[in-house]
Image (cartoon, rainbow, N blue to C red; front, side, top):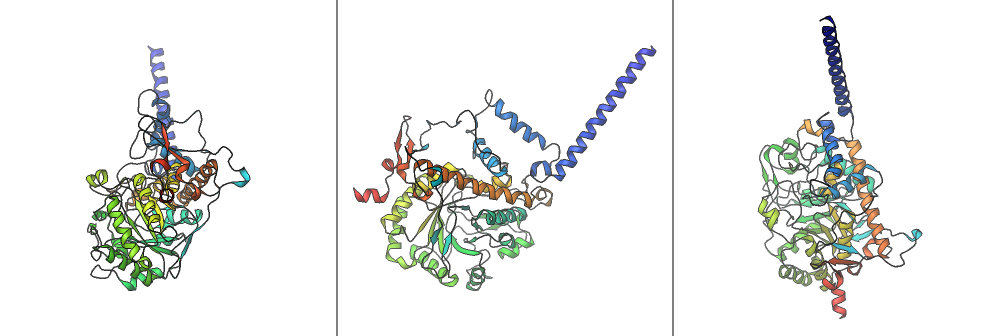
Length: 496
């Protein structure tokens, strides 16, 4: 009996010790997770957040047997997100064994390698490009890859600050989005593109119309390099921006010039622009007031509408936009109706070559720069856009991933677990600016570097020298055809 009781006592002591060790280990991990700055999920959800990383790591092995492969997830698959994560971390972005990409999917672009590419000391390098040659203060943009419009309000304060500082570090521009210019966009000292949305946030008067005084005030800031007149956005063409009431605090209300605590829904179009003549009037007016390049952001709907636009441009060449940003129907947003996200607007893959051809056909190749936007987050996407005819590429969600976005799909609920799209201090504390701005910069630099690698491989010394002949597009039968045969450029058609 005594022996049995001693054994039970020993087991009890061992059990208590194990519990103590577990509690101590859990407490240690809790303190470590709270203190670290690299992972917002672990910082906001100590100990429990570690399981996400564990499951993500093990998933690479389990997916071979039970689940979908890396490239089947939407809206962005694991392969895309993992590439960005590696780029942000500053570790090698090489992979082993072989590609997980299904090369037989129709529409897949394949770059044509040169038989005798330039030597390594003749490496492809990007040159700056001038935008707005007729503006009083044109902009010589240093980078072909930049940060697309994301408003303060849709994004949190630390997210915008990290983007601003990262943009400065990498030498890329930062678009404000339609929510106006906040002090946090200026924090890092980067080049800024001010977007004028349909509600004129940040440059509106008491009645909600465009204020020339506010325009001049914003334009006087040397960091503000260009103005973008937003006509439409890929995820919600024909619908204004939506900022839920819970995100409209006193600070955001002051920046935008709207009531605090009320949902901010901008008009579906600029009330004073109902035709192309009025659009050109507005472009000319903003350029005159600011002295800086002025462009438009829109979504392609049909070739006939785009041709009508360029016909009007040809009639008033002195008033044309300095750049056109084409957003694809697959573009993202913080909040929009599902039918618009799913069903409206031409894909950027179809729109960019079409707009490029029309621009060149009407003689504006050197006058109007073309910017491609819409779900372009990896080097192959960016290289495709440049080869298809774009002069620049902008990305929003790619840079959100660089901030630590985990695609939780809660952008419209003010409960983003990574602190990127929320104004809840509990979640914001997970996003440490001093860590994230470096990841933003690394991501931008790595995209630029690998696009230059692709350009080097196809045999050109500047990424913008890539052409449609440098790509092949996979067809329904699994074969591929040169893109310049499927969608020939205007110059090639004109020479026939």
